[in-house]
Length: 186
Image (cartoon, rainbow, N blue to C red; front, side, top):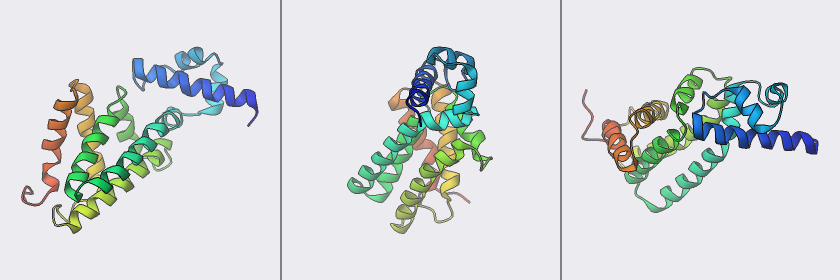
């Protein structure tokens, strides 16, 4: 990639990140291009869809989440690691207003860049879930995709109700209780 093209791409990513922080992920592409100091054509050449831009900006957060997951699995029992992972994941997904909505929409489109970006989160959820099932603490019929979708829904509630971290922790803990043995109802 040429140096000027790299600078433009980096400027777009920085502008998108700042805009998502301030306005949410449904912010205007025109505003992002203006903030980045590039034309709309440059933005769309680099990121043809909102999902493409969102996945690129979110990749740093996804990598950080996966690093946290490694630390959790190495320091906590399977059930506690899964609970903490899901709480942190819900908190991370609510970071930008409307991110849970975009993540949920992307799940139905396997070609979506956001669906691809979230695949690593679903896979890691599956690892935690398998470990918790093997330890006898999780219901064996629960699927990683279902758990991820539940956490996305819970992160939407955390975002919409303006939860602080303790409130988000309570909301997610209540929401995921049915995953575990002894709390499942047929």
